Image (cartoon, rainbow, N blue to C red):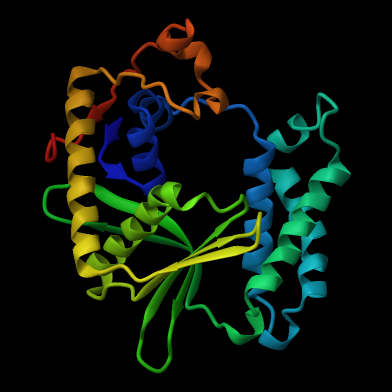
Length: 272
């Protein structure tokens, strides 16, 4: 298996813990069901479907009507949904109710009747020089009819972090901005993070210098990944999020044993 692409999520994994990156990107190990992640998937699908409606019909009531069908589709295609109710700590009604609250939160932050996105759930990808294929999914891409100004929008179903922890989220959006710059020849004029958990919006205007620093950071990350792939060694790093990691049983820092290196896994010859 050739590892020659990098997404904002996997780049963030690597910066957090190289071993976490390995288990997700190289080994691709299965992870336990997460109610928060599945709830996020459900809410994202509702907000995506909302923009299939005519602008005048995009009301809070219409958003609520979309939750039930979206949940039924999610449960049908992802068996992990039933797993999150197995121990009785979370009920189906509570899970759906939480999703409904987040959908309601969206309407306090934006008026979708005034928006006409160019794209939603958009796969963006580009390759530059001898580096990796940069790729990821943009929740929403807004392009102004008047001047072609581009805005990258990302929905977050959690709460906005304190300012000192916002750097990682902005790095992800600048990562997308770099891809769009390479692919379209125009840098996005704005990025927007919509935090539904506590009803906050974070807007930023990435400068050319910030995009260049992001490019250099990605190059550094990819260089380290390539070296670790060649050495077949991704060291674990202990951090504040270890308590939520799905791979503690395979982490030496928690008494676990490393998974056997997957056969055929290698880095890109062009970037190694």
